[in-house]
Length: 558
Image (cartoon, rainbow, N blue to C red; front, side):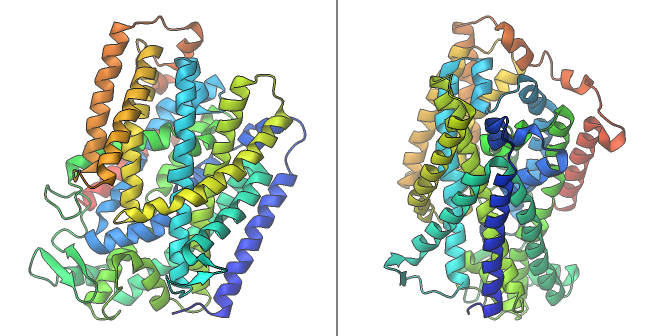
């Protein structure tokens, strides 16, 4: 199963087009305020661009591949990582974004220094750089390369120019993305992200609609999934075990084969989600570049609406593949669950459309990489170089940012194969986040909502939480621990919170004058601000609509 010349032409044209767009965006940068424009797009972003860029920075090839893989094995359960994001995006809009915009910080470590102290800033800067390179860039490169090798029909044992094929594609994708990100800065990132998101969604919608029509509609899908009388069944020829009783349910009981019972979702996801959507530089940088507070509030809410789509266009195709196999329409199915999305592309789509989907997968990987590369460059420039050399000018900072982009690209290429260690890529991704997120989530939550949270307590929590997370990573890496990673994140959060409270009382500090504007007097305070518009233009009304919509969705797929 290989791509036709038409498909390869489409992929090639796409790569050239994206790089050209990145160059063009770089040429549009203003000469004045060079640093601000390179790293924060001159604070000109409006809510549609912010929402699309946040969604694009989040979506990567991992979604196209691993969500379909998990759905083929367990059903819609991993869709929780998409829909639960809607609630944390509301938190970003209501409580975090206004404080970030009012403090006019370029990075989130900068916010921690103003709220706590310099030690907190330095620690978060290093952790954020490492997480961006490994979690955002590394996983995207690895997944895209792995899938492209399968789509192009290349033997895994083959080599290209003496290089393992997987590593060859990782290098190509990394270099291409690094080039246009280095030249164009954040403006190039958000512009290419917006174009890539449209292509990504078009490709995902295409394969979903083709699969849906082939199976004969929703009732036929439900019927096919219910053909087995037993709770567990094995799909012939796939070596994959899956549960049929609640395959279309998002909320599962304890003991479910997915290992994600409903309570682990509600307790564990907020720990991961608040870090990812509210405290991670790669994602929040789009909000920091907002034109004003209204745009900064509405952008995340627009992204929340977009997060409805992945369950239907990224997760559901894996379920459809199961049903099509059950009905005998796709033979024995993929040889392994990880091949689910590739299998559907090659068996369901005509020439030309295969190339479109392949280009969409490239888009997903490259947009995540470019977002993380620009954020890494921003962190190094402002939180390391500018921190130790305050007189560094904008031109020098941009130069540092470009060098950082090159170095980060190389490190991501070298470290990306780490994800081959895990059973599924999305499992490895979320496990790593569950070890990193708890202390950072704790420090930000207490910093935003509790005036008595002290700088000493925050630094102790960050360091101790990171050590605990590394120990859990080491234990898990060696196979000595088989617990639920979502509950692990929750337990680490509880421990970090207890430490934060105790240390704040043992080592109390008066709230600095400059910090008073960076913490809410009560949780109701941000709800009393200016509406900024009527009806859906009012961020409070829109937040209520988002919450209600996701509650309805959960009720329908309970």
